[in-house]
Image 1 (tube, rainbow, N blue to C red):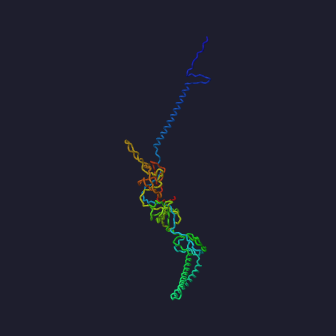
Image 2 (image 1 turned 30 degrees about the vertical axis):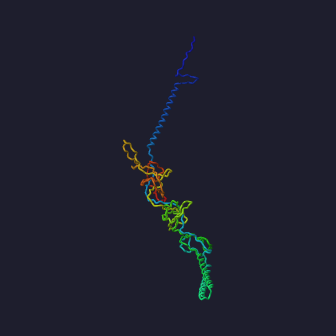
Image 3 (image 1 turned 90 degrees about the vertical axis):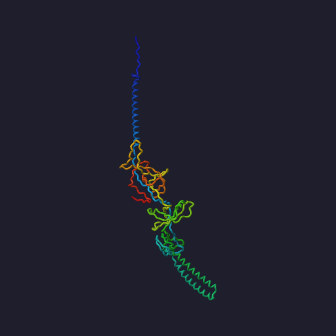
Length: 417
């Protein structure tokens, strides 16, 4: 008798072939777990390595000391400071005019050279006076005859031979003849043009034989020693600037030279448009290099001199929140704990103390040359960074090298090197 074949249920660890595909369940899960664990270990290793690198860099950054910055230094000095009022002025001749002809005539003589120094009453130009000279001789003869007629009329009047009317007529003719002589002499003198004062002649505008008419310019005559410097200052300067105060003058033509003078005139009124006061200083100009019309930089002493602290202008850091300088100080050791041994101050290479920069805010005053006055913030005697301050910060270590530092001057004189 036939019996059905036994049916067996496959276990989980057995494999069957379904549609030609072999499936293994437990081995596949184990392999996935192993791969995931390996990936996790790799990720943890990489993350730990990166964390270790970051911590190492942070610790190295905390221990890193920036290299010192090379700078130059200068001492805070106390000097005698004279307050000054700067202004831009114009040079004006002490006396100046343009000589011209008063009458029509022909130029017969020129008594000066272009640009020469002339003296007062020196003949500059002589016009033709031949006609006037002839008329003068005739007028002199008429005057002599009129005088003789007057003398005869006076003698006859004393004898009562002539009338009073005849005497008065003779007197009138005498006066008229003498007036004619004086008039001709004045005309001749006007045709001889003379220098009204000492000065320097300019370039003449006439030549020999030229016919000039009234008003024709002949030559400019200027007195330039001394010379005036006219300038304007704000009305506040009236409290400090007085007559007789000294003035220093410079011109762009001669930048290395300075001329001294004194305030000689202060206008008694203030310009209502600008609220400035016109002033005039008299400046010695013996060499004649200053000429009228030049622009000049004028510095007027304003008030009394006083002691002031000055630093090089290059040491100042200008900022909207306040101006400051960097002081050069020795680096101090950090305060140690109570149970820790006292450490020696840090030393730079060569056993010298380490220098650091400390920012100090200051209030500035007037600037002059390479220096600027400090009104507040410094005591005097400190050392400040004169060049290189713009690249510093508080606590920055410094390397001082003053070998090539240019000296600061109140009157700088550029030198080509």
